[in-house]
Length: 628
Image 1 (cartoon, rainbow, N blue to C red):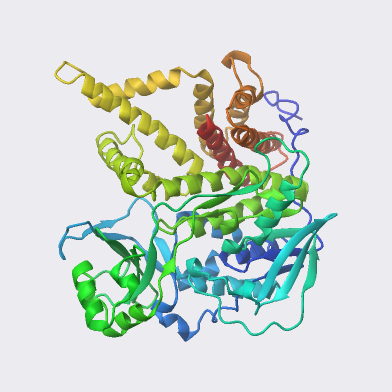
Image 2 (tube, rainbow, N blue to C red):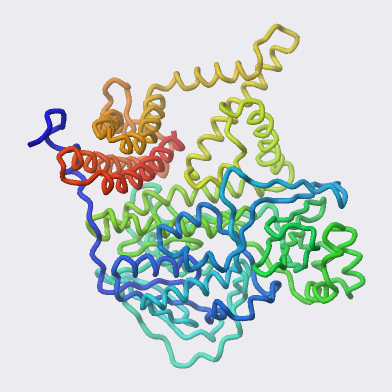
């Protein structure tokens, strides 16, 4: 018998039904890097039987090979909270963690500080990042893939892609041709001199294709070309890759060193100077490898003649590190050519085409200053897996994946680029805001969030949410400063009091945003309601949120009507996609709560649905607020 306080039918169950996507007859993954192999693992653990990965490069050494002791040979990357959470969802973190080195904090030498002027900061607000050689990460994922029966073909170049009926058709060729010699400097290794091509081109077909081909972007280029040939499409809906001019060109060299015994081995060491930046991470085994970012015209770039010259260069530039760099390492630095950093690019406004999903560096590339690239790529993989779990078929799953991650790809690249504009713009859009955030957050941490870099490292915050919050902070900060300047010499209220009143005034001026923020707070509280067994409260939260997503009603406006008034078609499409994702998440919350109320589902089982649905709902809500 249905309890008297339970609605007769859960909200939106008939509108949005979810189920596990049936595995297709075959899946091809283009790109055997971290994201591509993680995708293969995620699919195999969902019952996909015929999964094949294609990669242009030869396989890396085995995970326990002695080659990993050569620190300078491999590029180091950090897997932060975002990447760790995503890899746990994929089911691959346990295969990687034993080969990583935890990093608990940073010691930084600011410009002008002496040898003893480094400042140590140990992060207690979040778990440590784990450092691993990029290629060893691939090796870990490759071993896990093979244990699951996944086929990985190396030294295969995908020359072109087309779509016929319900299949993606890939034209492939053995590596050895010019197309396979593209330098993978960003990913930590260059394509080895491949053997001569044996045999000609051949075709592979699959009903499901995943593109994770990094800087190559063969599939993204094919999707862009296919969209250009469409006779009709809504403005802003054609797929394209947006590329940004590099206004702060830097090249880099890797510099290995062995720190002294009294230096901590779980710290990221860095130094900033007027002509270069140096950032060093620990490799498993105790050695460190630093990345020296320099201008293309730098003395080191042009070529130092010998080790004594290199020693003088490092003594002058990095006196805190130079004594710990061996002559052998200096000779290697001289001999090794400089490498270039990637350009800022993102793809959108969707990340799918027919039966194809695009993720990782294929849809967002950033300079590796803040460890966001590979971590965001793993979040893409986890989001694709979740979409496949929650959707009734592949087309719906790919649309849900796009709705969740396309906006994130765009915001990630736009935010990262704002840190790297160079010249006066660097101060205006990066250094200045960091200073403001440090002051205001230090004075009123409950009112102002930490700086953007710190917020980007928080796994529970979407990139869109970070940008929205920092825009709000910046508006209030500037208003406080303007008010303080106007009131100089007068009996004005304290700056923070002004900021609080301005925040209240700004929020109260927009009833729809007020409702959305109230709804967000309610959704964030749903896990606590579920833990306490108050499933009726969960359903009330859903009921509170639904009206102003679609109906004008008491708010005077809805998300749907507000989207129609946005200036760009891309912004409209983003809001509507996020709105659809939010509706689906709310439907799943309501369905889970109703199933518990009528005794159909145990609370513990429903709680798992609640956790995932709340995460998805908050991400969608943040995406909507970011556009408003």
